Image: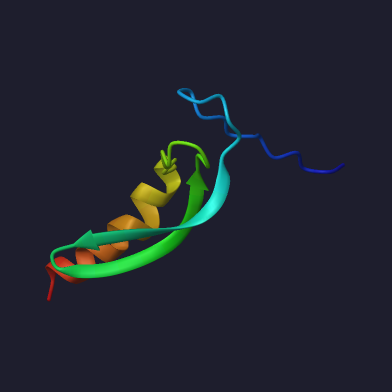
Length: 65
C-alpha cells in the first residue's frame, strides 16, 4: 500500500504549497530548513512536529550558549 501525502493548500491564494528554503533568525543566529511555502504570497507552513522537535532543540541550544 502506497502512502499518500496530503497536499497543503494556501488558504489565502488557493495555491499548492511547495518546498522552499526558509531562513530563521533567533537570538542573533541564523539557520534554515526547507518548508512548504505558497509560491504566490510566500506564507510558510510550520508543522507542530517541527516546532516541538527540531526548532525547540535549536532554541534550547542557543539559549544555553
